[in-house]
Length: 160
Length: 160
Image 1 (cartoon, rainbow over the protein chains, first blue to last red):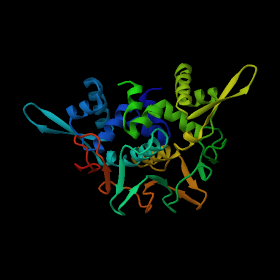
Image 2: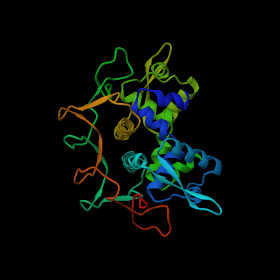
Image 3: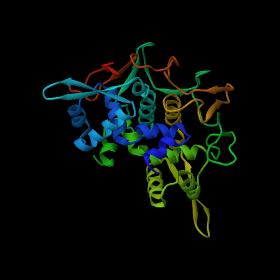
Image 4: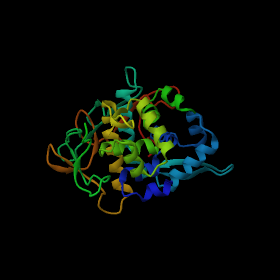
């Protein structure tokens, strides 16, 4: 399967992975949220080879997640900023951070997030847009379950 | 950077990517939520080469996301089920689905999710565990921002 196939899949998870689905791309996006925007700063923080970083930045620009802006004329230098589409990935990154805090840490989370609107340290929760309860397996009906024919609704994780 | 380095990073996003951060792994996890658990079913749905699928399944078992269970003795055949740790990735997958629905679709989402507890079609929202409002950039203080020295608190996406 090529990246083009992923983009063509009738599946929003696959299409998201087409845009951001490799380790470097997601680490670049994480660093962008932390305020890193210049090639050399990203390279230093990630310890990544220049060609790989250039490739991933180019792809993220192509996918509309980052935009490239020149900040110096001589020599020409560029920085990479999150677009609106890129900024909207904050939920994906926070959900990953929460999972890592829960399952891969050894005690206190490396970074805490305070929700300044309510003033509390927050643990990001993936919640229902209607009732705001946390979305849990056993309460989620997908329509359709797209992997079986004929396609019909079914619960997520039906084998648990 | 090797996968081992990712796991050793003092960052929960990096550690999550160490466990699940490639396209195939995340597509396998998505399919597991849809109820696919057998090697051949996964191979057929994903159109992936046997060796790649075997490699990713082995890694997901190593990382504790899936567990392998024999379901047939002659010939020996195995299925792969989500562990508790794996099931807890539902938020990450739903956040990716929501982003894909918003930014990569052309109209109606391929799959709708109904929250059976409240009875409404839901659009997964990454929300504050305290006040249940959606977490938005401009309201998120990270402590510390781990990419600059000295490390101190700062807003996410400070350059917007």
